[in-house]
Every structure is written in structure tokens, then in C-alpha cells.
Image (tube, rainbow, N blue to C red; front, side, top):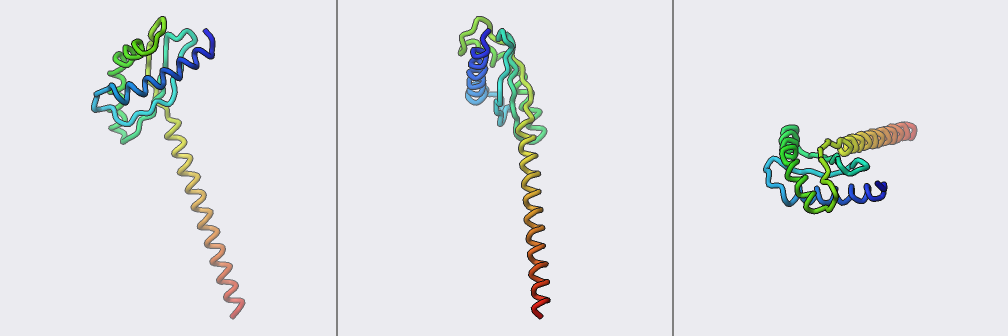
Length: 135
């Protein structure tokens, strides 16, 4: 199957699954979920949905359990919304890239803060030595 068609179906599935999770699922365990990407096989028979989950560790576990229990419902909805010869078998995978990028951002901010403190300390010591020379 054409790679362009697979990419279009992946993008459409990402939009539809996001909409289903946001508006259709009534499971109270499912909290803040972001569908980051969808990867389909070339024959569109299988799809892996990458999701990012936010919250405490317990909330993430509960949300994951809720998503796993709703796989059949989501697959049925996809089959009704997207006209394909076969409705893909879907599975969820945790996408840790958002957590990783947040961690990198924290490290960069810490480095920037440390550099500013070093500059401030250097300026203060230079001002003190200048004041001593003036006396």
C-alpha cells in the first residue's frame, strides 16, 4: 500500500482517537491523555497508538487500565468513522518523549540559573575588589 495513504490514515486515526477519548469515553479513570502519534502497518491491519499520560503514578496506572479496557470500544468507533476494508487491531503504547523533554527543559533551566548565579557572584567580587582598590 502507498506510504502516503498509510500516513494519511495514521493522521486521521490520531484525530479520531483523540476525539473518541475526549468526548466518547465515560470511564472516570481516564484523565489527561494526549495521543502523540499512531503507527500503522503497511497493510493497515494493526495500529499502535502512542499516548502520553499526565498525573501522579497512581493516576497514570488507573488511566492506563481504563484505556486498555476501552480498546474494543475505540476499535469499533474507528471502524464506524473511518472506511477501511479492515478495522485495524489497535494497541496502546506509552510515549515517554514528553516526560523526557520536560526533564531536559528542567536541566537547561537549572544550568541557566547556575550560570546567572556565577555571573552575579563574579560581578559582586569584582565590585568588592574595585571598592578595596579605591580605599
